[in-house]
Length: 256
Image 1 (cartoon, rainbow, N blue to C red):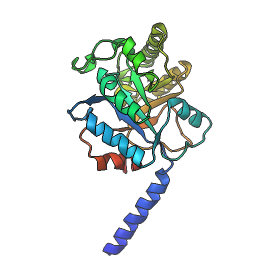
Image 2 (cartoon, rainbow, N blue to C red):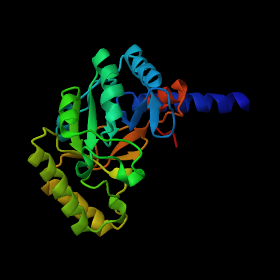
Image 3 (spheres, rainbow, N blue to C red):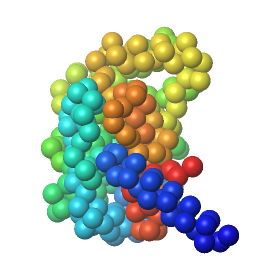
């Protein structure tokens, strides 16, 4: 009986591997620190190890523009594509993440809550400084800049008008600061309205704002063709992850 169970598990894993082998992992990071590792922070050495693992296993980073084209043309990306994303524009992304990405010839996306440029993460007790406009220019072109709401609001708790207003302020701030950005959006906290009418109103607002892709969390890989371009999923990469757990996330995403 045990051999039958083992065989079924093996078959299931092989099936799942082939099902996800051409799916896109989108990695979600927040902070990088010289030593600290926690739910929102990877250490520099850990980040280097993770990117080295990607390189050793023949993964290659893509840009949002590559992904937009693949989604809109309903064509899969090349095998072992990966998109690296960072939320909130912490100064440590400039000082610690950028050099590692540049050394390995990789690129990433930085989702920016524009109301707090040059300030601190007020939604989390003002514990970390955020990049200034000049610092955001310094991370280009290794990082693409993209949208993370204007005031780091959880859209799960907003109505349609509030969402429309925040989106408009988010894009207007980028335009006023003359910062180059891509029309992609990451929901703060991964939150979207549960009410179907408000959720549809949000997607209409995203579309009218010219936003071409939006990212939740979800922790699953993205398979093509994409069913909903405003529901792309990201993998939550934590400083508490071992390299084995990181590898499992990249290869398979959330199993259940």
